Image (tube, rainbow, N blue to C red; front, side):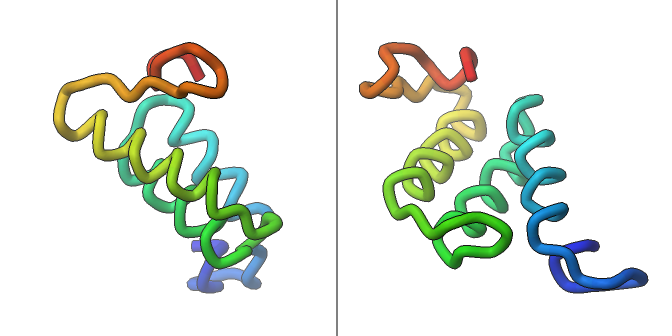
Length: 79
């Protein structure tokens, strides 16, 4: 795991890219990690708005519903 350096050197930027790739494929755990990275600034600049956005997308995927991104006018399935 690049985030914690398990079996490798920690690389937060690479970890973020891996999590974002999973999130874009619709994996809710990837969305949770992207949210946490934005919340804590791991591999990416802190951004509370994007953290909340990804957290809500993860919840929507788990619940089977769609999360509408008001800023972009589209649902979570259209990342």
